Image (tube, rainbow, N blue to C red; front, side, top):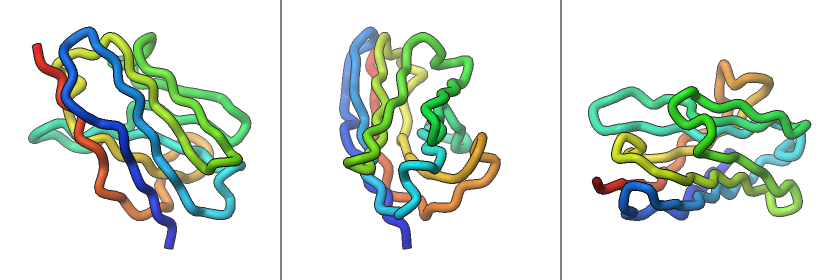
Length: 119
C-alpha cells in the first residue's frame, strides 16, 4: 500500500504564495512520475502538474508560469511551489504517482491539503 501524505495548504490572499509537499512511500519513487491534482468545489479532480523520473515537467495551462513542481528523491517528496495565486486556484490538492504522462495513477488517494485563495 503506497501512502501519500500532502501538506502545506492554507488560506492565502490573491497574489500570495504557498508551497505544498507530498511525502510518498513507494520503492520506485525516484523513477516514477509524480503529479499534483486539484479538486475545486463542485468540480472533478484535475491534473495541474507532473514531473517525470528524469525531471521533465508539465503544467496545465491554467497554472503555467505560476506553479513549479520539483522533487527530492532522497526524501521521496514532491513539491509544488504556487505563486501569484488566484481565487480560482482554490481547492483540495492531492498528489499521486504513475508512469509517463499519468494517464493512470497507481497510488491510493490521500487526504489532500486544502488551499483557499481569498480575493
